[in-house]
Amino acid sequence: MLLVDGLTKSFDGFLAVKNVSFEVAEGEILGLIGPNGSGKSTTFNLIAGALKPTAGSVRFRGAEIGGLPAYRVAHAGIGRTHQIPKPFRKLSLVDNVALAAFYGANETISREEAYRRAKDTLALVGIVSTDVQKLGAAGLKKLELARALATQPKLLLADESLGGLDHGEMEQAAELLAAIRGKRGITIVWVEHIMGVLMRVVDRCVVLDHGEVIARGRPAEVARDPKVIEVYLGTDAPEVQAATHARRQ
Image (cartoon, rainbow, N blue to C red; front, top):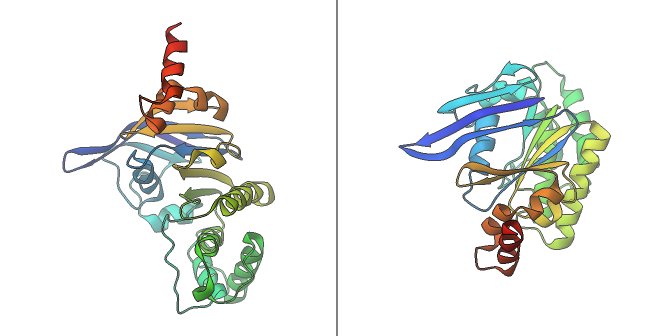
């Protein structure tokens, strides 16, 4: 469904993303992980159209989308959440989500259809309040997700869905993403730096560090990779020393 090939982004000579390549199969949940500053969000923004690549290709369902503006990427069938939710606080929850429905797939929908989608999507993510001002961190994350889903995406880019949540809320957020794949048949790329919860949900992982891919594979394989352990824990951690010793043996 998605093919990223040699993706590179330079900011005034600084390479934030360096020759990143990976693919996402239809119906899959792919975890794009790495520590803070590893290039995850930049990669996301390049796919979503918020940034233009310096080099490389992004192909979605066979068509090149690298460099297209965000609205055209959304019309192609890619929805995204943002790490920091920014709802329209003077609008109701339903209005927030209905507004997003108008900016999805390249089609004309009626006001009635937009509000129907909004109510269905709010029910799916489990928001029961009607007041944006009363939402906590978990509720705002759900609202951000609902707005992305209202665009009727084939591929969802979920950016840091666990940030700011406690452990119980993290578990619920992960279960919700898995349910969305199951109920809506939406393919998901999930960017995250909190590995523990994500690894139980995703089918495969791609790990970034300093803008480059350092590992890829099934969650269990990635979790045992010495490079990944080193990036997350540091070279002095016992886990890293044990993994390095085992590799040498």
